Image (cartoon, rainbow, N blue to C red; front, side, top):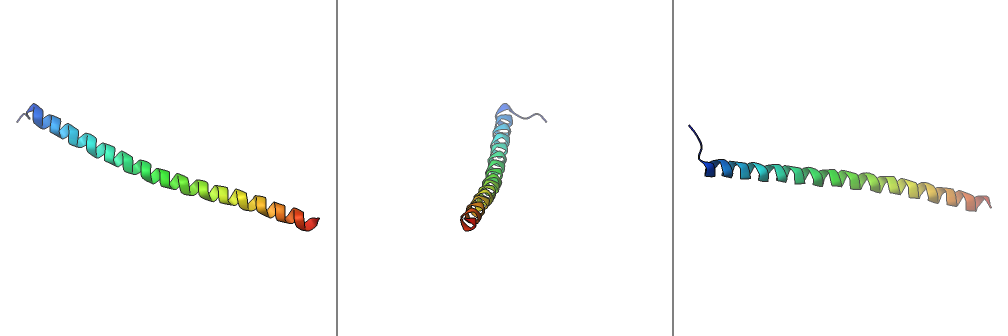
Length: 60
């Protein structure tokens, strides 16, 4: 049983929309993980810099 061209076009559009939605969701989750990682990394660097500055001031 062959499908008509409009039915094939409709299936193709549905597939493209689903693929794009999954891709956007993946990008959103990936962005959230990247943001959290960078926040932790910068917090640790800032904390180390503050600890070094505090130790330098107490030693003087």
